[in-house]
Length: 209
Image 1: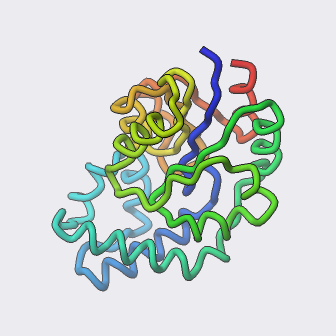
Image 2: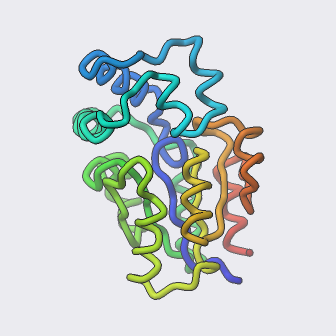
Image 3: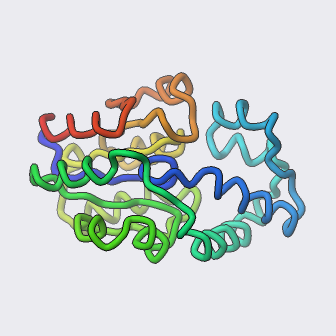
């Protein structure tokens, strides 16, 4: 079926914000007393889903809501440091020009996303699904489908993490993975996404799907 909407994850998919988020997560580790992310942890973390990373970093699950609020607040303060990946503007303009609607699905706040995108690219975004809980993307996608009165096959959820793929599967939409973000390609492919992109501009292929 024709792709009518692309729902983009933000961090690691459109925005090169992972170095910033490592800093913020380590700030929260000191505040909430769990393991900081060390250089030697990175390779292993990039093969894991969020559910597996939580015990690796020794994070008590009951602390997650407080940690998430802290990370979101600090990200808002520092989003001016974040840059989009090369080609994101061209890609978003290309999809929009072909009539594909663009949504942002992220744990970040809408304010932070708007700041990082800038005034021109913000105008290309048709829907902001922001401040989503760590494992709440599937629920938000189902709500989005009802709101826009869409068939599941008309939407592609695109992200860089295993939890994005799992969220798309639970919501019943098609799923695409990008290989320039946090999770390594081998781990993403094991989850069987319908699409796997190796460069930002390859995403334009969805316009011809």
